[in-house]
Each structure stands twice: as structure tokens, then as C-alpha cells.
Length: 356
Image 1 (cartoon, helix red, strand yellow):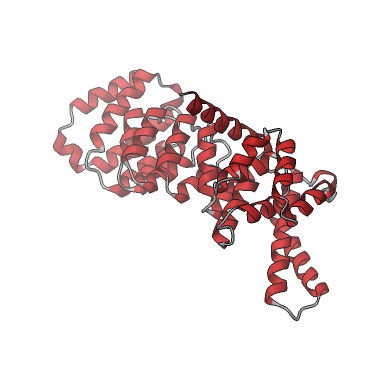
Image 2 (cartoon, one colour; image 1 turned 60 degrees about the horizontal axis):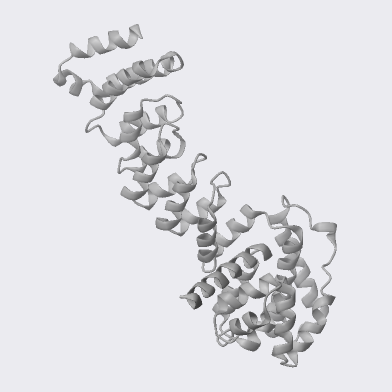
């Protein structure tokens, strides 16, 4: 405290003209002195440093400010006012260190930065390890695709149900975001196995169509080699449960119904598996609402093969590759329990409209 008081006294003896001439060296000296004393200083003493630094940094060149930002970013009790000035600076080299690392920026500061600055600044906020749900919801609302991808990959960032839903929706048209979410949610073994099987089926069909002269053995070899190469990306993931192929024999009769176009009988099976009223399921499949149909099929815990057969039989427009891929991504990024919850919300909303 005595040092801080002495520093304040010295500053009163220096004219502003002197400060302007020697500002760079004064800031460097003051910063080094603060770093040596930081762990011993009270908040009142830190405030004296803050006053001095805020006076010194006015209109300072960006390179000097960037150096100051780097010096202060990791200090737990860094001068808070100075940190805020640096965080709101237009130059990302100045704002970057404190935006990504300084714990002196409060939730309100970060939300203000998100509202006032561009996507470069917002992207740095998305990398922080101390985000709150309020901040992540705001990032999801205004963030660009790179911001959302970064946020999804940031496993320390908490997501609200609303935020998760928004990210999953955006993932339909953003493969990088979908990959980040899959890694973040650490898909369970059974679902990972299903993803691999669906991918293998699509690849096999593509190779069969584009290489008509290739033998079945050659195509199978290419598919297996591709899966083996892709598995390298999942080497840190939990192993498939029991390393067993999933038993889809329970879907054989259902698929037979779909292929014979016995839709009403198939919908009864779906209603039973999803524990839904048959009339509700029938009403869902009476309209081309891809999203709701896909949600019902996920609640029934069907494989994508069975779900795709059902959608193709009932929904118009699934012949478009982009639409088919979008529905496939939505299906796999949704858990059975999430699907059941979404359906419950739809039913509640319908009941409320009917009552009114």
C-alpha cells in the first residue's frame, strides 16, 4: 500500500506533456512493478495502478496496447478498468489476450462485448473457459458459423436446452458444427455403431452406382478401408458397447410393412414403439412436416434405415439429396429421450390450441 501511495504522489508531480513524451517506457515500468507486487496488493492499491494505467493508455498505439494486454491477461487481480478498455479495443491483437484469458472480465462485460463488437471479438469470447449459460445463449443468437463451431467444441461452456436445440438445428446445414456437437455429446456406443453402419450403407450404394463393373468384394474392401481410416478420428471415443453388431431383427417385419406400402399397419407399430396415441401419429404423417415425422421416428427408436423407408413412403421431397441429408443429420443428432420430450411439447401446444 505504501508503494501505491508513493506512486500516486509521483504521478501528481509529472506533467501531462512529460507523460506523452515518455508514455511507452512509463507503462512498461508501471506494468512490471505491478506484476511484481500483484499478489500482495489490496483492491484499493490495484485501483491506484488502474487509475494510472487508464490515464497512460489513452490514444496509445496498438502495438504497445497489445503488449500490455498480453502482460495483464493472466493476472487474477489485474486492473479491471484497464482490462475493460483493452477488451473493447477495435484491434483484435489488443483485445484478444484479455478476451480469451482474463478472469477480470465479468459476465456483463462479455455480454457487452458480444453486443458491441464484431465476429472476431465474439469468436474469442466463445473460447473462454468461464462462460455462463446467459453468455452462451447470447453467442448462439448472434454468432457466425465459426463462433458456433468454436462454442460447440468448448466443453467447458454450459448450454441451456434452448441453446442446445438451436445448435442442433443449425447443425443440419453445417457439417463442422455437427462434428463438433457429436464430439461434445460423446455419442454412446450403440449410436456410434448405427452411424457407422448408415455411413457404410450410403458409401456402398454410391460405389455400386458409380463403379458398376467393380466386384462386390472390391466394393466391400473399399468400404471397410474407408471405415478403418475414419476410425482413427474416433480412437479416443468410448468403444462400441460389447463390440457387437446391433440386432435389427425386430425391424424386419416393420420394413416388410413399409415395402408393401401398408402404411397404417406400420404407423401402428411406430405408435406402439414410441408409446404414442395412434391418432396422433396418423395426424403427424398426414402432413409433410419432415421435422415432426423424424422426431416421432426417433422416439420409436428405429434405425435410420427404417426411418428413411418411412419418410420416403410418406413425405414428398425426400428425393432431394440435401433434404435427405438434413433429415438424416437431424435424426442422428437427437436422442430418443429428446425426441419424446419434443413430442410432449407439441402435444401440449396442440391441446392448448384446441382448448382455446
